[in-house]
Image (cartoon, rainbow, N blue to C red; front, side):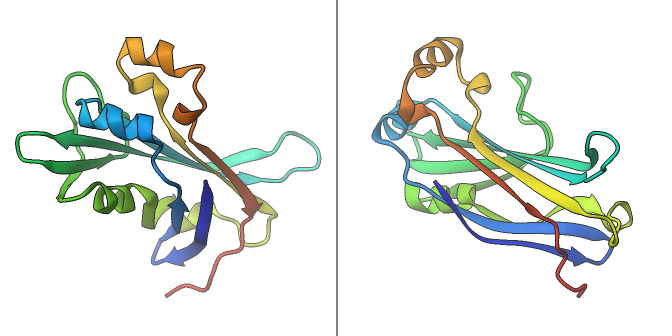
Length: 172
C-alpha cells in the first residue's frame, strides 16, 4: 500500500485532507466480496500538538468508515461512507454510491477528497503539530467466523500508517 498526493489545507473554517491510497485488492478479498461479504475500511486522522513537558496533546480526531459490497442481483458494486462505524441496525447516516465495476468502486474507497478533519480555530499556527493518518481494513466489522479466519492471513491485513508535520496550505 502507498499514499499519493496527501494534502492538508485550510478551507473556510475547516482543515481538510485529500489523499489517494493505492493498493490492489488481494484475490481472497475479491472472492469474499463476490460471495456476499461486505468489506469495511476505516481511516483515522489525529492532529497532535507537540509538548516538551508532557505527552503530545491530541487537538483533533476524525474517522471515516467505508463499506464496500457486491449486489449480485443487479451486478453492481456499492460503496457507503459514514463518519461512524456501521451497525447491525442499519447504515445510519451515510453517503451511498453504486458502481458498475470493482475498479470504479475501489477508486471511491481509495480516494479522500477535502475531508474535514478539524475546525480551523482548533489548529494553532504557531505550535508544532503533527498529523497521523491510519487507513486499514477493519476486521472487527466482519462476520465473526471471518474475523477468526482472517487473523492469521497476510492478505486480510491491509494497513497504511502515515505521520507528518502539519503544514497548512494557504486558505482559499
